[in-house]
Length: 379
Ligand code: SF4
Ligand code: SF4
Image 1 (cartoon, protein in one colour):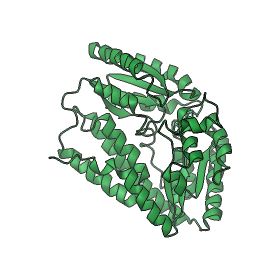
Image 2: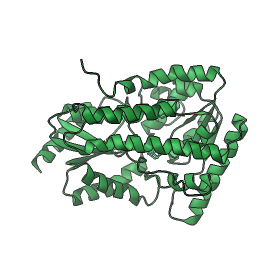
Image 3: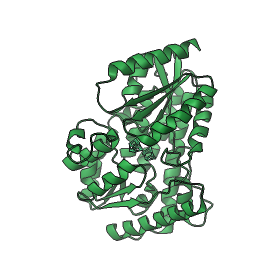
Image 4: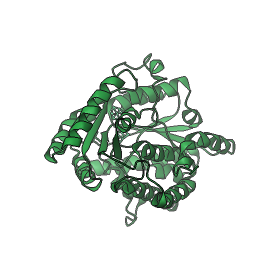
């Protein structure tokens, strides 16, 4: 039987738990985060392991609702639920947590989380065009550096930051190259495979190994039989972050015959074009420049997301766009109007879905996705 080219990524999260435990036993520290604005390069430069802690399961939500309101984004409730029930091994291993003032729900949740672990919240400016915003973000990254140094008892040198920048730049460009392979028809990776690779890689404690795995995958995909040989409608998924456990929209779309060829959200393409510019003399300024360009809906205005979507629609030869908003995510919900206008200008069908982490709406999602695929097939 032919080995799937993404097989190494299937159990990466589980394998990483064991590796992180071994490294913890040797005294290496772990720093958890909940957002792509967290400059992981500083964590790497401090000799610690960065881990992503965003909750993608429904199970811990009821525990979170004992403290947090029910009418809150499921990603926040799942993340907090895992923390408060201590059922996520990555949270358990985390010595420190880094948060940012992104959306209201997340920043208020961090206040609660401070009772469980040491949490440092970075003040993220939400208007990225102004010089004052840039200076604030530079200072926030400097403040994080000092906090990590104090709490991890290490010195973070400029040289170590540049080395970490090089590693993260390499990782990003490889994962982007893999995503870009799906521009061809038929695409080598299904949406689920794409998600498995891009989501699972963030759990690997060994970045050098992740880079080797991505390089190997890229080479193997060049000669591998595609996941789907006969693709009808090529779908772009945008909106709130999705991970394994919250992939229901991707799964349904593909079960119904569509091919999710590109993911624009945070687990997908949103940050992959952004490389830290190594021509700056100060690595902190270089990091601030890169991270402030992330096109999250928390930014106002957020034109780069629309520009990115426009490019992706063209490059991935998209037939229809699905925009997924998790319940009570106001920023993505409001921005959906602009995304709809853009997609309609391109003459493509657009579907905005609001959902949560439960399976109660599977039937209605199925009906709506089926209708979209039919429209895309006729257009
Ligand atoms: S969508 Fe925005 S707030 Fe959420 S993880 Fe991405 S960058 Fe962070
Ligand atoms: S999905 Fe929206 S509400 Fe939820 S954490 Fe991300 S930005 Fe905040």
